[in-house]
Length: 441
Image (cartoon, rainbow, N blue to C red; front, side, top):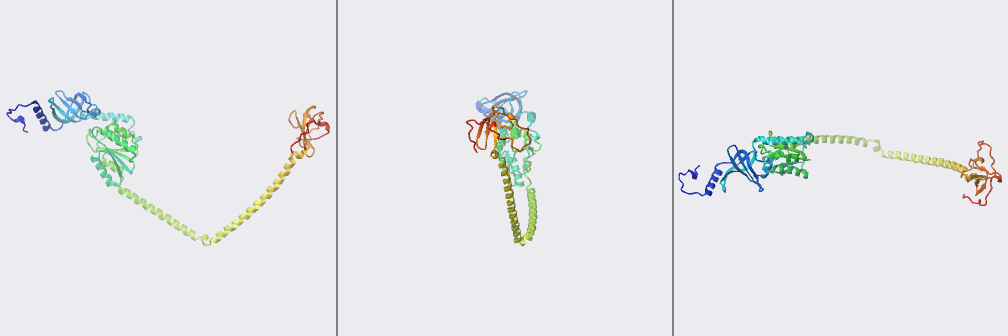
């Protein structure tokens, strides 16, 4: 490549700016983007979001500018002394004439550092129980709707949709567009899972992207994605990368499949198989209906040929005769019961009249009640001379005073009522002036 420096003589006098610009153009046009490995020296994460640092080895150092790389720098944990690999273009910063690299990617030096981070997070989340088989939810056999969290421009979603259309065209799919690589990708993937859960938008969620390097798949190794999958109420399938790729999302998901196409095959049944099952079910249903129809036809024929349908009036007459007999038996039972009840009632009325105390007093008996004890006198020995006694007669009462107590003979079992005493001579009672009080009948 011929340049101005190839000319043997150049009488022109160059300004500093012209020289630095020419060197910058030479660097930018002559060298393609390349990876540089070194140890971080000075490091500044500016509030503008840009990152300024140096990479160095045992003999040299080089300035690096990583525009809008603050978030990734914090995520990677960049610090002085850390070995990194930086991808970018070489250039010259004209104001200071300083040779530097404009970076577009930064990763820890070698794959060992990323693998160490992977194993550390895996071990910590496994200790918390996020990967336990007991918490895995079953995947529905034929979901009505599938939610997919992925990049809408990636090959993964195209393969996924192609398989769905071929195997089961009517399947409903809801896609949540999310970055699957680079800064902020992990947060977008987690937000997609959270959104589909909050909206209850589908029966199963597929988190997917195509294959790539460990750096390309690193968003699916972030803790925020693993926790969103573990917290999902809807079952989650992880279909990230190729069969040989393994991510933290694979461990946290309810099911891991090797490719996006495998995820599509899993969430759908083959249409031919489903149609075969429908045909078989229709055949069994038709056979069952035909058998029941034949049984009902035979039963109808037996009923139509029965005696009841041939002579229906005979059945009516039989029931009329039975009804008349039942009415006669019911009437006879009522009359007999009424006579028995009337006879019993008369007997009870006679006994009640015989036991009526008023009837006893009407035959010349009286009830004597001691005012001292308030009890009826059954034995003369229960009273002493001078006791006030209240005498209840058939009509009215008497207040008397006992003057003489004449003991009676021992009880010989007479039928006289125990609470009454035959009225003897006037010696047993001494009516007082206020004893003419009446007694209510």
